[in-house]
Every structure is written in structure tokens, then in C-alpha cells.
Image (cartoon, rainbow, N blue to C red; front, side, top):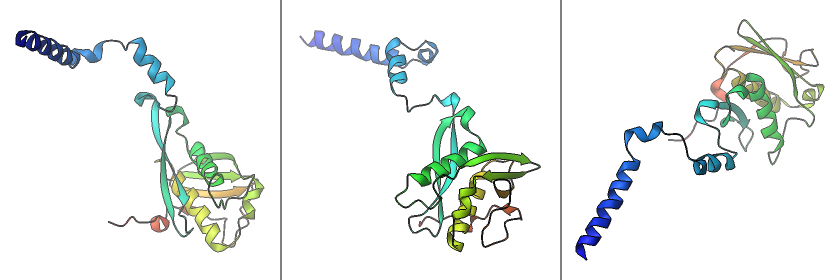
Length: 181
């Protein structure tokens, strides 16, 4: 009886170890693994995915926080990052970006992104809300190495905020909430 148990244990152990051999990675995936991967639609294969970062306001609306999401590599664009930022705000308990606001177009020239929003963006009122929107957008766009400055437009004209919106804005990390260590 002991010989049978020892033989069965040795057989099971050899099967387990054979499954971990270095050449096992070169074999094609079985149908079962392919089916389980396709059934899990939220997973994106590593080669085809990228991490997109955008910023959102903190619950007290005094700072901003980065949000990282996995996207398809072809969706890792500055325009998509701003659109995700707006979409995230719409799902918030207290959204502050006016309904109907979206990014009409985004052009990048010599390190400057020109973000042209719909006119609803001019409904953001109050210095704090305006500053948060600017910080969120600028820090989201400057996550991309080819963007150093941002200009804001609404329907092609400078935003109608309390501050001078004809200037270019650079990344300002003072709005990013520092985590307590």
C-alpha cells in the first residue's frame, strides 16, 4: 500500500513539475485558457494595453488626485485622457464640470496642447472650481511627455473664467494631494 501511495505521489509531483518547465511558455494556449481570457472582457493583454492617467478632484474639492486606468494601447491619447477625466466627473457624487461639456478637439504644437471645449465649460464658476478644472486638465495633459503647456478654449475662444485664460498654463503639482506617510 505504501508503494502505491509513494508511486502516486511521485507521479503527481512529476506532472506538477513538468507543467512548470521552462519550455511550457512556448506552447500555444489551450482552448480553455483562450476561452477564459476572452470571457473576462475587462482584462486587456499586456502587449496591447497601456496605463492612462487623469486627475480628479478630492472629495473636499481642494486638491486633485491621479486616477490610473488600463486602456488599449491605441486609446492611450491625450484627448482620451481628458475625455476620461470628464466622464469620471460626471459619475461623481457631486460633479462640478457642467453637463454637456466635452472636448471638441485637441491639437499639440511645439509642446503646447490647445484644448478646445464646448461652451458649457464657461458655466464653471468660482475661483476654486476654475482652478481645480485648470489643474486637473493641465496635469492630465502634461502626463504626456510631448506636452509641456496647455491653452484653454471654449468654442475656439479663450475661456470666460475669473483669471486670465489667454495665457498658457504649465504643470502645477501644488494642487495634487500629498499622501500621508
